[in-house]
Length: 398
Image 1 (tube, rainbow, N blue to C red):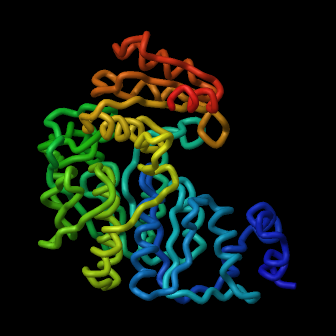
Image 2 (tube, rainbow, N blue to C red):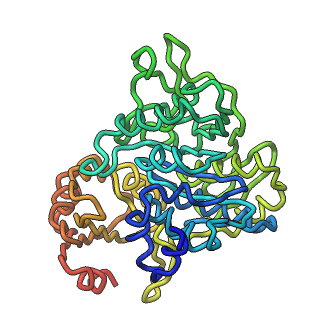
């Protein structure tokens, strides 16, 4: 039996555990003759990858993708095994993956890659990933030999720098003009303060969130690049934005989501997908997997959002503060292995000006840590309740 035959004969839930044992280089066994698109970042991988995949499907193409978010090497391998023939041949028009940042060089040193999308870089799970510069340098080294399409967030200086890693790569930048709540000063924890080339402090015209914004190096002019897709007229109240005079309506109300959709539009435009199809997809695209997921519980409108690092949490807090209605906040913090056991990042969350939040409930294995963090920000301690049991916390909330 071939490596692929052995792997396919195993129960599906065990594939990702045994495939590498069968053959450490099993990625070389697959036969792929279609474009492969990969999305990587600290935040936004699932949203962007799924939007790209869904848009291509709506255009009539057969797409293989890891939509469930299994984005490490074993997840990529299991997705391919589930969708290949016995001889390793994969029949598809496109393959799209979200890929954990640390696995990009490892996977695509072996497996075909036509378009790489990089959304952002933030500190995340320091106990597993180390400092963000470590990840950036690993991807930069990989890009030195990469000659495909490279779609980059021009407004993240740690991402935009990668456009200079290899002159043979085809680089496409997307950029967003300032939105209503953009600021002149950095309001949240960020990483991009100095030019990666001459080490001069960057000058920002505005910050959208964290270190994402319009920047330029006053010494070497870093930050001055040709823009492929320009986002204008962002209106989060109406949930619309414009690219090339085309108005896009979306189901989300955060500038963070606008950037993810700008990346998705950039990618599918490279493959000549009709703007009408893109517009129709964005108008109804939702995730329903804990990313700005909206539901009604006990007749209360509820929004669920996942955050695993200070930037993700601060974006969630922005959504809270940009909504003027009275509300309550449930913050669940765990330190399980999958979550990241170092929770020191919570001290970079800005709780200082919670808007119309009458009560905060904390829960999870580190319920008391986050409660202390919120208390020290100045929030009234009498309005904070903590429950180690998530069930108790939810019952208290509703």
